[in-house]
Length: 180
Image 1 (spheres, rainbow, N blue to C red):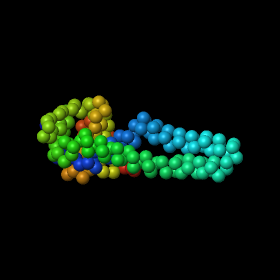
Image 2: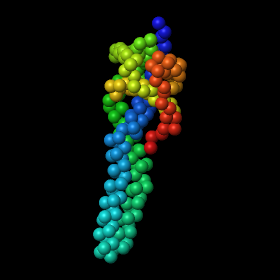
Image 3: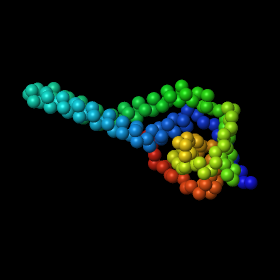
Image 4: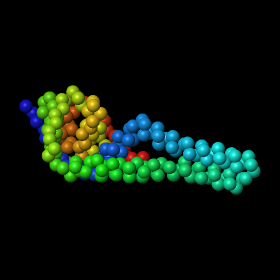
């Protein structure tokens, strides 16, 4: 029986990267951010048309400028807003998991995780994907649950290589991913 193991401890930043990555891949979040970026400038434009029809060019121009500024700066505002939201979410909901030592073990037919709260085992067939980001691996299960494995943990690369070999899945490299 071939066994590969890795010890890990997750910090706030590990959970934050996971939450932001998941949000960036969510069609709902992407659509909401896109709509927010466009709807406000369109409303400003409609208000500006009313002012321009009333021959109030200065106010119409100011409203158009405000809409343009929103369109330009909303992405930076949205990035910061989501980051703060997820930081608060992690502080409230993951406080008992941050800094807790855990242990991942890969056997011939399953993946085991244990920490102070308990143990769990997953059949290798339940693994849907292995995503590789610049600093993390996310092992996604078919039940839409993911395991976070920071690349900084000793043995992480060897663990993922062994997982690929046993599952037949290739990692999906997203090495250029950044939260936008």
